[in-house]
Length: 267
Image 1 (cartoon, helix red, strand yellow):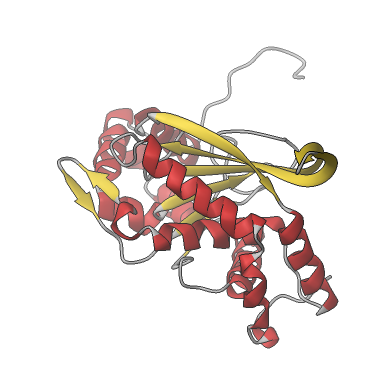
Image 2 (image 1 turned 180 degrees about the horizontal axis):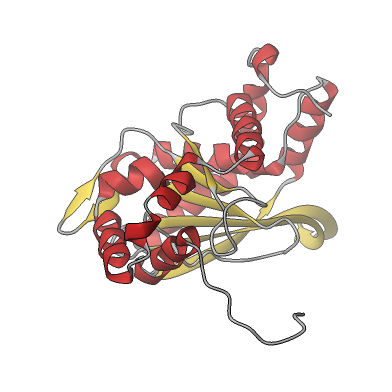
């Protein structure tokens, strides 16, 4: 707590982030589902035996990318009165301990619909380390433009124009946002900058009923916030079912057979 009450001015990066939240399209709805991560836990243990580092975050990013890739032209972004169909699934994943207090800097992972699990894991480890090592180029650019961007009407006009452009959002924000909070059971990101925002909480042992018996399973709750102009309830249900199937059935186990020399080693 401060010794005395005071105001602190926001720097230009914080003002830019605040305007992004102010002008972004709000979600039409969000849904959530529980996923049995027993098979995914086995994949992580198998990787560790092979001296490879995998986490639940790596698995979720790959599962979301693969599910969206399989949805074909249902994977889209809206721009005014038209749809934009990207040819890749690009995931923006916030990195804790970076950026400003409003908005952590996100790593942008290209083509997670086609890239295999261990390649995604290597990319996430590398990109997170780079972002934590220093301020990203985008923030440095904002600081260089501070004389102009500190004027609210100019900054707001630019943010609104950029957010209307599907190609701009795809280039700088990806085609899906995936956020992780590993100390909470559940949360729902309510600012889907690109129309779809996925939130994943921690994996926690829970009591569940299975085939008439009581058992304990590692469960993760995943949410999905959507712009209703992008998806309706039936479409997001199809997406969530596919993500659930990939993770609960252990489909990604086969991707451990990728060459190990390009993947992060286990600590």
